[in-house]
Length: 185
Image (cartoon, rainbow, N blue to C red; front, side):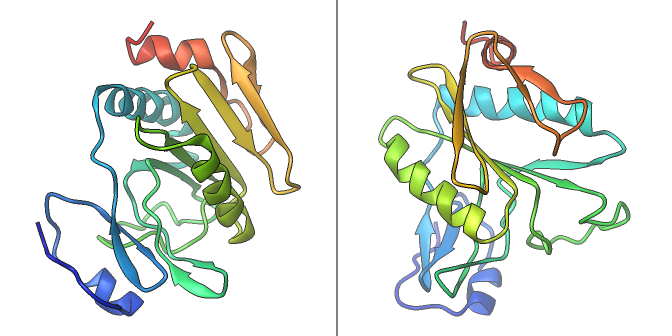
């Protein structure tokens, strides 16, 4: 684990060596992400597989890919659990080993046991203010997916209600389908 103390510039943050701990860049600090547990990891893989099957030829879905954004006027490099970006925003040929260079359509965050929905509602607002088009927050405890929209509205999906979105044409998932794919029901 890298010991990171003090203020960093975005450039210093991006040049940190890779290690066992993932960090987000928030207010000039390298903030460690919560270490994922079984439910979190299972859901991350399940969602990645389901979205990847849909997005072949349309874009990329990747786990733990830093995004370069602005938050309250400051550089911000969050590390969503999953990021989807279309080839319209990210050229198909783009294969650099660096942070996502464009604002994605969708970020997905999965709540861990020591985190709260309130924390992620605030983070969703920050993502949307930075230009991300959709934010999904997965709550394993109540088996729900909360979808946040740029207009400030949100919708909670449970069980077999399909998540259908004109931003993601052809993608139709249900919460039950995601949790079944993760083998959590």
